[in-house]
Amino acid sequence: MTGPVTGPAPAARGPQPGERPVVLTFGTFDLFHIGHLRIIERAASLGRLVVGVSSDELNRRKKGRYPIYSQDERMAIVASLACVEGVFLEEALERKREYLLRHGADMLVMGDDWQGRFDEFSDICRVLYLPRTPDVSTTSLIETIRALSHRP
Ligand code: C2G
Image 1: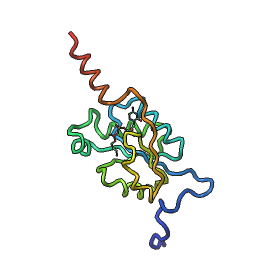
Image 2: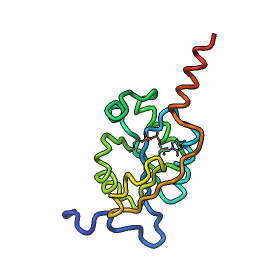
Image 3: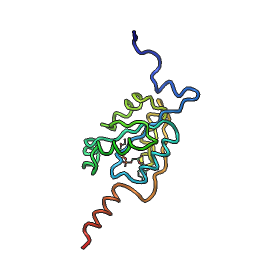
Image 4: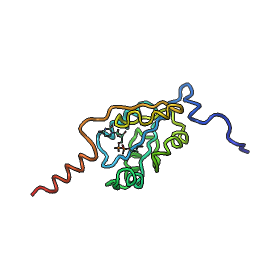
């Protein structure tokens, strides 16, 4: 018979000796590119990586447009990477604390375009910002494709 779950929340427990820390990162990962791969690889080198993929609706609310690839496609692409242990849907930026606690995160890793934005979570996990890969973004890819398609 199982009783009620007691003891500290997973995030408060921290990795036990010999255990790899749980690392969470978040992103849209639309038109998956080398910058996305690099941050995922670097985050995975720090522990067991779980990725929150932002939903189509979150993108519409925050950026005013839907991603090119659907959330199911974006999640499937990220989940297919050997260094990714799991993925889940990020439905609201405001629910980060809940996601971090639910997944027992020891560390939150984001690109430095988010520098300082998630420092409030340093009470429950380590918060790390890694340098973005220069000269590549989903926006610049869309612009390049658009320019090519307008050529005579
Ligand atoms: N990234 C990077 N280098 C680039 C482009 C992106 O390191 N040239 C990183 C970003 O810093 C981010 C991750 O890749 O950590 C995903 O980037 P986006 O898909 O643009 O995600 P974003 O829309 O910023 O995330 O809670 C955050 C939300 O999910 C939105």
